[in-house]
Image 1 (tube, rainbow, N blue to C red):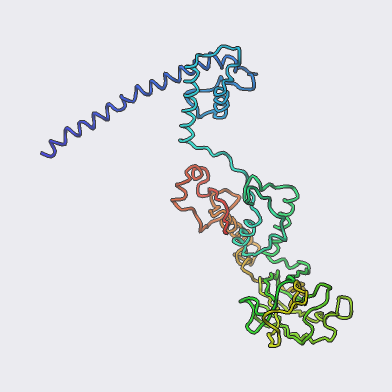
Image 2 (cartoon, helix red, strand yellow):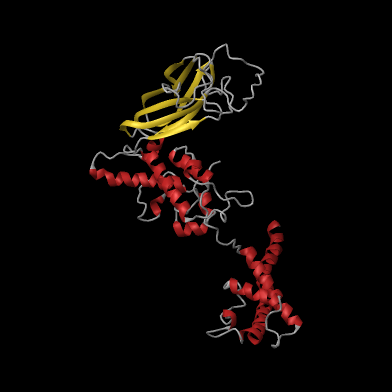
Length: 434
């Protein structure tokens, strides 16, 4: 009984399947007829003038297919602007009646709007260089290096309050040279250049910083004043670390009225404890008058490559006045540590082992025959980290046999055009973390 009742329903569905295409035929015929009519209007009033090898204004309408407004989209948009402004045909030339004119404009507008929804075209993106913050983050993620971009690169241009707009981030020849110089310096830091010459870097503490107590969690307990800095030692070797005392308005050394102990540490390990004796001429010493009281606050020690914490602080004493300070008209200069300087490397022992070198040098060939395979492995890992793809299918430029970052099925399916063109090697923007 159920089967008998289902037969009429099945028959109605099949009949609908047969008649639906037939019902769609009049609509298709109507659209085809409208396109033919509009083509005749264009041929009569526009194409007759805009055709041939030298058409007016360089606008050749002869090859346009009004049934396919997806092709030659720029020409159709230009034609549509002219028709909207009633600039075509020119004044004094024959024109169609108002109804025909409006129908042609509406047809082109409707079809172009439909194509814009079906096939959106956002245009070509501006070539976007990384700004300073993005560049530093990329170096940190790829090479495990924390760099001070303010030292290496000039400030980025700002547009609408933002410094990451592609249209604003231009690349001038001078800026390109700065980026190349920064890349060279960063590369030497990453791989460990044992021929790097000795350099000198100073970390200055502002004069107005009050150093009357433990300054931060990085400082040891029982300390007063001082500072903590993170310095990158490029290779294994000897380095000279020196500390400068804070000076006043007239370059006089501050805080010499009593004896103090200065503690210098590297990664929590004490390098030296210096004694700064009291001087009866405190407040009168200036640079150039005898030996500076901080001239002996230096030590030369072997240090392994890597980023390490340097701490210079005073031992906390109980005679330091606290609370409300007396008004002595000197409120912009306070005693304490004025600077930490690092010079070196001297007597280089080797490139050292750092996280950067562990990421780069995945293998170390023991023989000449192994160098090619090792180089391919290193380059393959670098390109995979940069683009998050496996370079094995990108061609001979990236020969490799393994990859651990193949795109997932979901991500590749969402980009069918890239997938079809590049296979497993469709491009993704390099990682940027804030």
